[in-house]
Length: 420
Image 1 (cartoon, one colour):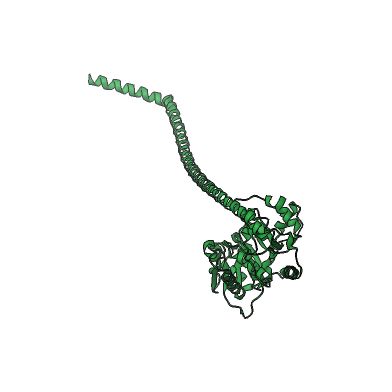
Image 2 (cartoon, rainbow, N blue to C red):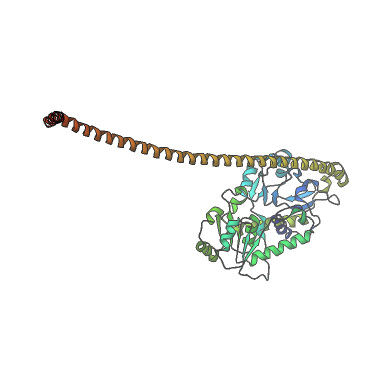
């Protein structure tokens, strides 16, 4: 089982690790078209059904020709265009109940199945069964896979080791043109790169867990708003994990110490690995030994003609609706971003107005202080004037002033007489 149109190499890694348990491959089944699978003849086809379920919820439950091992499964409801947990109810839920206890990749999937009364157990992730390659020697480089740009820059400035910058993102249109063998060869070469590395630093689950199984120390760096339902279960297995926000606050010396310590991963994963290997091996051995009753299966021609064609038509309709819904969501998100930008602009304008208000208040305060100072000076001058006036009044009313005035009048009269 593989995802034909994947945009994430992690999906191919999950296929690669399950493939090792198969004695032979008779069919390539697309995970997103599980319900449309029809074999060449009326027979059961055993499939290890590990992975992420599903983008196309209408592909659930799988074809009746599939004999499934439900293991290392992650059921999600995190898509933008989704039906929540409804596909785990009714006919979809009955399929899981009918085919035994479901091996859950993570604790959140267990909770999801518990809510829908579906028997389950924690199996862990199949990528923990990744086998080490022979004749791969350790080298001195660091693999950095899909971390934030600022995290990458911090690491680059903190080490003299060679850095291999890798991404698990791929173009789905290109990868689906590759043969299955070529895709598996690409995965193998990538895993060898991780095994040879001094250390692997990533935000990706299906980089971290295979690297742990390959014996390479792993540092998992995620955002604070990371996908808890997928990752939280496995945070204890890498040698260290950090939030990208806190990692970027470390200085170069601390980061250099982190890279050079080369702390070992948590070995608890080995118990999970052993149980996964045991379950898969038992399933394959039983599938080869036991003969299932093919008479219970529908006729291949009739099923293909009456059911699969109709399902494929529904799938096409669903895809059209999904694309339209995505387009509407894209438009909504675009409008929302514009609205957010307008809010941000309004915040900036309010901030500017606040600054202007503060400046105006400062100006008014300064003018008020100047006015108060002026009034104070006027009062002081007024007080001085009153004091001087009082002094003058006292002088005018004094006997000396009156004698002086009398003397002046006498003098003036004498002057007039002389003039005559």
